[in-house]
Length: 461
Image (cartoon, rainbow, N blue to C red; front, side, top):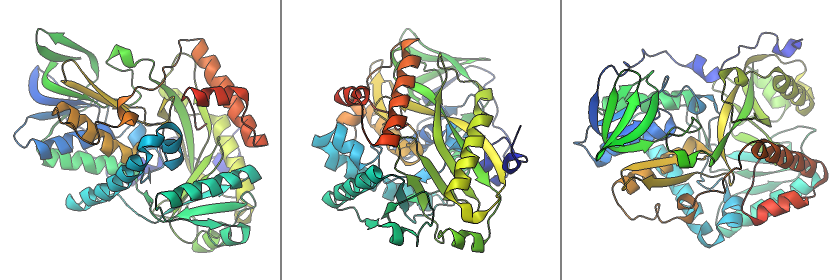
């Protein structure tokens, strides 16, 4: 039985209700040829098409999307826009210490350029660069925040450690003991981001085919062909930006797995309610657990409260029905009440889930095959809002045979540890998640997690 706070929750992403619906682009109805075909109409694909147009003004460019642009992961996430391409400074130091300084610099540069692109093309995406607050619920998480701040100081990243009393001025909750605030972090409306990228691509002369799934990538002699329902696309070059959809390149099948993440959004809150929990500014918030929550305000002062459960289904299932999981919604609603008892009864207006393309090292990776004519990027692991732009530029560098700082990174060019076949895949994920939950309770990392660390394997939840 659904609890009262969830009784009237709409089972779809809140962000979609903030859009004025645009008519769908036509589906592919006949064979066509383009200089560049981008497969996938989410953030990565649309950034790729836009910057391809800027690089190659005379090229014929098309985006082909299985459903509607931004309808999958790009329109279902929390809209956290990080100054990082490496899933944070700590992850860069653990996995690529020799290039951590470069990764940190490129991540901050990417966010600056991201904002500049928004201004250049007049994209209204509710972009707010107001910072991020990381909070700790356990003593060992407080130690982790202090370590994070030391890493920030090492790279000249502005931040402030907040003890319990200081934290109350930014977030007053019995659930959290301390925090670190970093001012250089942004939020946006992800559905508007996808819609605005789509609009700008069309204005720049990119051709778009929606409701056009691609079933196969193959070669016919020297020609690259994409087989769709009602025609084939011939491409001089191809950029694959399909995120967690089954990959068109077979060797990528074991590189990522689909993990389901769940979100709630409250009804709009009053200024008085927000003052009661100390949250008067518009920064995003995330806690420091392995099984973590992330939360933010919407433009109309709802609270998005999401995360904690991260569900992998046996056999890489990707069913739309799995985006509705009542037990996860009930758990999130209960945790919200525990975190903010001052608010009393709060109803949720929306409840939904989405798929995270999870790699075993929590960062994006890229590659280029078939004689440098087919590039791909995937594995963002929940950190793709800003990093998708960087991935797009990386793919274009490779398609242009350019040797750049982006293409020389070990982080992007080295493939992640592959996931084993079923049933070992499902068993391994479950065991790792059990160990991560135990670490959240005890503060101790067990042998399984230490072994994964040694092999460069890791999950956030």
